[in-house]
Length: 71
Image (cartoon, rainbow, N blue to C red; front, side):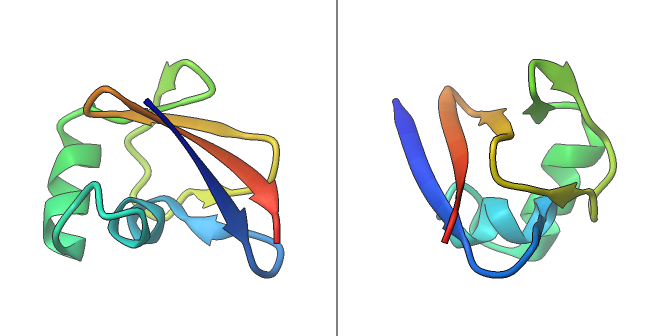
Protein backbone atom coordinates (compact mmCIF):
# COMPACT_ATOMS: atom_id res chain seq x y z
CA UNK A 1 0.00 0.00 0.00
CA UNK A 2 1.18 3.51 -0.73
CA UNK A 3 0.85 6.61 1.46
CA UNK A 4 1.34 10.13 0.15
CA UNK A 5 2.68 12.42 2.86
CA UNK A 6 2.88 16.20 2.44
CA UNK A 7 5.88 17.82 4.12
CA UNK A 8 5.34 21.23 5.65
CA UNK A 9 8.64 23.10 5.47
CA UNK A 10 11.85 21.85 3.89
CA UNK A 11 12.05 18.37 5.44
CA UNK A 12 10.85 15.93 8.11
CA UNK A 13 13.11 13.67 10.15
CA UNK A 14 12.80 9.97 9.35
CA UNK A 15 11.78 9.01 12.90
CA UNK A 16 9.12 11.74 12.97
CA UNK A 17 7.77 10.59 9.59
CA UNK A 18 7.21 7.02 10.80
CA UNK A 19 5.36 8.33 13.84
CA UNK A 20 3.33 10.92 11.87
CA UNK A 21 2.12 8.31 9.37
CA UNK A 22 1.07 5.97 12.18
CA UNK A 23 3.45 3.21 11.09
CA UNK A 24 5.17 3.42 14.50
CA UNK A 25 3.32 4.05 17.75
CA UNK A 26 6.11 6.09 19.31
CA UNK A 27 9.42 7.74 18.66
CA UNK A 28 11.11 4.88 20.48
CA UNK A 29 9.50 2.30 18.21
CA UNK A 30 10.59 4.35 15.18
CA UNK A 31 14.17 4.55 16.48
CA UNK A 32 14.25 0.79 17.03
CA UNK A 33 12.91 0.01 13.54
CA UNK A 34 15.44 2.35 11.93
CA UNK A 35 18.36 1.02 14.02
CA UNK A 36 17.41 -2.57 13.11
CA UNK A 37 17.67 -1.74 9.41
CA UNK A 38 13.97 -2.29 8.68
CA UNK A 39 13.50 1.09 6.96
CA UNK A 40 14.50 1.87 3.37
CA UNK A 41 14.88 5.31 1.82
CA UNK A 42 14.91 5.32 -1.98
CA UNK A 43 15.37 1.50 -1.97
CA UNK A 44 18.43 1.60 0.34
CA UNK A 45 18.48 0.71 4.04
CA UNK A 46 18.98 3.88 6.10
CA UNK A 47 19.90 3.68 9.79
CA UNK A 48 20.05 7.44 10.44
CA UNK A 49 17.19 8.17 12.86
CA UNK A 50 17.19 11.88 12.16
CA UNK A 51 17.84 11.72 8.41
CA UNK A 52 16.19 14.67 6.67
CA UNK A 53 13.49 13.40 4.32
CA UNK A 54 12.59 15.76 1.49
CA UNK A 55 9.86 15.88 -1.17
CA UNK A 56 10.51 13.37 -3.95
CA UNK A 57 11.94 10.69 -1.67
CA UNK A 58 10.28 7.32 -1.06
CA UNK A 59 10.39 5.53 2.30
CA UNK A 60 9.52 1.82 2.67
CA UNK A 61 8.66 0.18 5.99
CA UNK A 62 6.49 -2.72 7.15
CA UNK A 63 5.07 -3.38 3.69
CA UNK A 64 4.08 0.27 3.26
CA UNK A 65 5.53 2.82 0.86
CA UNK A 66 5.48 6.51 1.78
CA UNK A 67 5.85 9.00 -1.05
CA UNK A 68 6.91 12.44 0.13
CA UNK A 69 5.48 15.50 -1.56
CA UNK A 70 5.76 19.24 -0.91
CA UNK A 71 3.02 20.54 1.38
